[in-house]
Length: 135
Ligand SMILES: [Zn+2]
Image 1 (tube, rainbow, N blue to C red):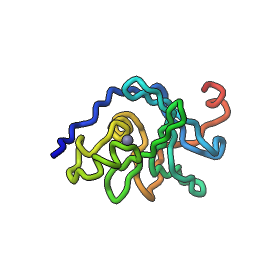
Image 2 (tube, rainbow, N blue to C red):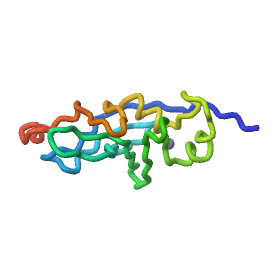
Image 3 (cartoon, helix red, strand yellow):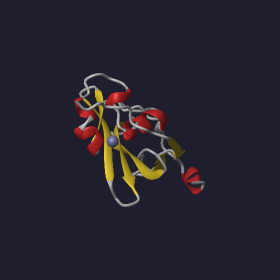
Image 4 (cartoon, helix red, strand yellow):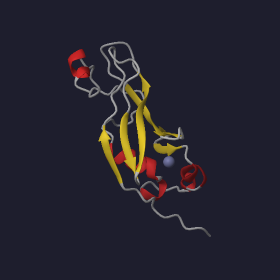
């Protein structure tokens, strides 16, 4: 019988992703480093009509070579489409570190917007053009 160990995850957030808004309809990716590998990280979700904020449904992590992983909340638990989660951790029934691949662990550790289906994130405010010039 194979033993599942917690995923090894040394991570840091270089800059946070910016949620899509009226001025930035596609948002701006942030930068997340996991075990020494950089990922461009973007918010997945939708922008409902104003004045509601962006609804976060997940995160997309893209490596430099184009490999892409989506982390999202499905039926009350975090899922990832990487091989580790799909073939190993998806079978772990308990919540917690054994059920999390390194991508989920890093997303939960660093990213500011809670994934919450159907509820707008008030923290994801629109930026002004002055804010964008400083980026
Ligand atoms: Zn993963």
